[in-house]
Every structure is written in C-alpha cells, then in structure tokens.
Image (cartoon, rainbow, N blue to C red; front, side, top):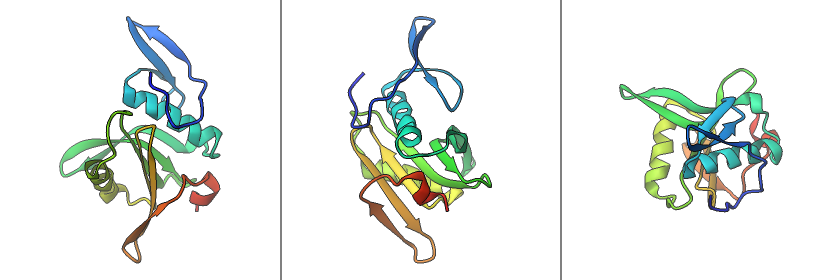
Length: 151
C-alpha cells in the first residue's frame, strides 16, 4: 500500500479467504484492505496514539438516515454522553479532496450537527470547526488534540 502523510501505525495484517485484511481496533474484527481502509486505519491510530482520542469514544462505519436513505460516516467521535462531536470522512490516496467530498461530509452533518469535520485521503487532511450560532466555519491549521475537542 501507498505510504501516507501520517505517522507509522502498527497494524495487524492477515490473509482471510485469499484477501489481505487489517484488524480494525474499533470494530474489533478483520476488514478487507482497500486504499480507503488503509487510510482509515492509519488515521484512527493517529487520533488515538498521537492526538489522545479515547478509542472507546470512536466508532467506524456509523449508520445514519438521510432523506430516506441509509448513509455511513467513516468515523465518528462521541463525547462522554454519547453525543457526536466529530465526523471523519476518508478517501483513497489517489482521490482528490474536492468540493464533492466536503459536500458529502456536510450532508452527514445535517443529521449529526457536530462541531468538527475532518476529511483525509491519507496525504492531505483538512479539519474545520463549525460555529452554529454564527453560522460560520473555520479551517484549522492542524488536527486538534482530544483535549481541544472534548468540550
């Protein structure tokens, strides 16, 4: 798999039914490795190991209902009261982080109304903070540590 612009992660890799798989520490099972899954696993490890996010407050592949359809957020951070605080959307490294990607995560946020949105293709990462009172958003220079987003 392609090297990413993230710290190295110690991933558990395995073969299952002739397919390369990676152990997802949040779902606690092996998942087939795709380029997007490669990004997800590295990013989740980055959040936990380098940014201090508690693994028990993170979930992968979170279903939500939007306009009578079921969608899945790639990763969601919850607070201690199980309220969503952050949505992370991943793309494969060769996929550009275009307006279409930001539109996708914005649609998910219609339902979840989180203060933080992140998109990453493993090479580029964008994080913004949403201010609902002022109806604005601000792109941040870096992904905040958990201490900065937990309130």
